[in-house]
Length: 200
Image (cartoon, rainbow, N blue to C red; front, side):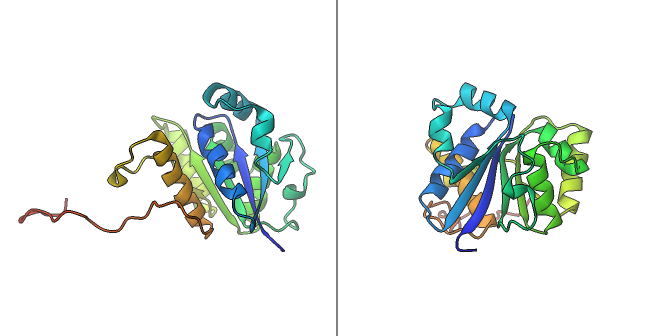
């Protein structure tokens, strides 16, 4: 490969901002080629949650694939990639990945990533979780995927929503060993603890 390749999918759960922000960050990294897939419900969430048109979001990716195009390059294991992130990942998509249902390009690409032993990261979005959700997360984890609910990290004391989104995106990029300049590292406690503090 002349460049690293990362598949980014946006599906029908709240949190389309994560997928879009990842594309923005990756756009600034010439060493990474991005392949974008957005489900129909994903586009509905983009329209509801983000004040950007479809063309401007698609322009962030190096290549855009239709969710219905199961004959796309990324549907084959012979097309080498570094892996895939689904941000956000709906419970429907999670269930399909867990069951190995390659019924659209998102789930087919995820299946390919798993069978080729590449990295799959799912920003699963739902709350509260029922037993089916938990069992599907377990199944995907047992297959080698990483379930990463995009929860805010308050220890960095984020002042804006953008900072919490960036922190999650930075951690996702870390999982793919992609260098970035987002300052989201824990450097240890900045204040001494009181005497008598105990672990709980």
